[in-house]
Amino acid sequence: MSLAIDMGYRPAAPDFTRSFGPVTALIVGPLATLLATFIAAIAAVGVAANLDPNGPAAFFEQTGAELTGAAGQRIEALVMVLSAPFTIAMILGISALRGNVRRILAIGGAFPLRPLLIAAVCVALTVCFEFWLSSTFPVVAELGALPSENTAALPENTALILSIIAAVIGAPLAEELVFRGFVFTAVRERWGFAWALVLSSVLFAAMHFEPTGLYALIVLPSAFLLGWLREKTGGIYAPILIHAVFNTIACAGLVV
Image (tube, rainbow, N blue to C red):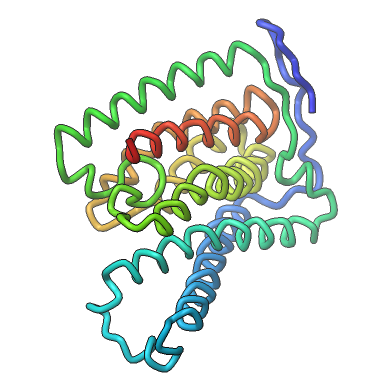
């Protein structure tokens, strides 16, 4: 891993040979994420059923209302934790079909000072803006507008810890591999940086859609920042780092 601390750093043109086509990547990336989440949900329910003190049969006899409390929150948090490794495994497996996984997923990249400083300032401004939004408009806070899915609404320690792990470690790794790695690389090869930035960012925001649509709009600027950082550094290492820092700050604000 290169640690280039050069104010005038310019990454070499990436080699995109043997990556997937853009249309394929735009379809396969989100589908892999959704399938991984579905598998994680099945696994989480299975774990919860087997851990139920009354046994699996009693667990499955519970109504939806009975699962909206602490038990339901733990299941939701466990889904978040499990979906990340399932997504990573799936996207790595799909990429391996083409042979050069590191190039297809842009695994690598430098850490040039200027882009990182710009990203740090943008993260600080974004976090401040989102804290202001959540304090000014209660509906935003209820959406879990800050990274991690509604960690503020998880009173039990188990669910809270699982959610923080998912937000700080799982989400940055899985989401950057899919959106700034798999999707961005494929679109960048054929259609150029502008389309890669726009499509990967919009797709990233769309995957965070909920009924009001506000959460998707809130994460969209962060998606553009991470895509720009992916281009400037030549890989996904820096976006993973900034994504993790952003989520850590947001989780700290929610917990404190």
